[in-house]
Amino acid sequence: MKSPAPNASETGNERAAFRPRRVWECFGLASLFASLCVVCAHPFLAAGETPFTIPTFHCAGLYWSPPGGAAGKEVLVRYRRSGETGWKQELPMRYNPIPKDTLLSQVLSPEEKFEYDTRLSYTAVSLQNRLGDFAPSEQEFRDLVRLQKQYDDNYGPLSLAASGRDVSQERAVAQKELEAQTRALLGDERYLEYRHEQTWARSSFRNVAQEHGIPKQTAFQVFDITDVAGQQADAIRGNAMLSRNQKQTALDAIRGQTESTLAGMIGQPALQGA
Image 1 (cartoon, rainbow, N blue to C red):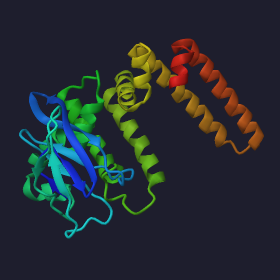
Image 2 (image 1 turned 30 degrees about the vertical axis):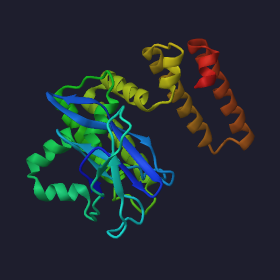
Image 3 (image 1 turned 90 degrees about the vertical axis):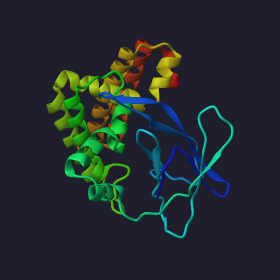
Image 4 (image 1 turned 60 degrees about the vertical axis):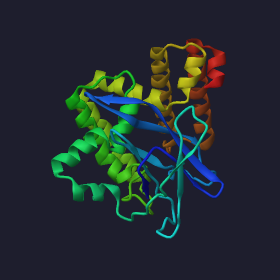
């Protein structure tokens, strides 16, 4: 299903509204609707069913793939600009059973499809929004999108290939492969910077750090410490030589040591809010 503008979709009393967040610029190209956010989500939306947007230079498309979607099930659409109170009526969403990626491949040449994927695809926009202060070259960004899209097509939140089956183990293997390929592309030092920015973009600790005045670089150190603690905890859980009580004792020790270290770095109030 798709709609041609930044919008809100509603069925009965349920409504999801979208609004522009910022102008996105990537190597000289700017799109007014490159990033829109949900301001009022459908109460019945489950994880992974949230609509997403694809921007162009003059409008934005809204895509939604709810379970049970069909041609006879109408989804009405309204939208409004950020800061305005009045809603405007848009055309209803149009049902299309053909995957969008397949549709684009039918109307674009391979070169045009690659340019679309690099600049305006869901993968490209999502990646751009997670870059933070990391500044890749144009070629690096293209390569990052290529690697991420290979993963997204098979295991991403919008992947049809993973629909209806358990791919958790396959996804974990593919995630490790993606990380290894990204590290090889950027090198160890810049990969760590890239990974820190990715974590910062999606971590709830970002709000805690901003509230307590914690520098971004200190937050990155927090990420590293918690990553190491997580790896140690996973190793303990997977150790068949330890009894349940031994595992719990070791896990408690890791937790206590980690919390003590973090409290010394960021303070107890921030730690409690994390």
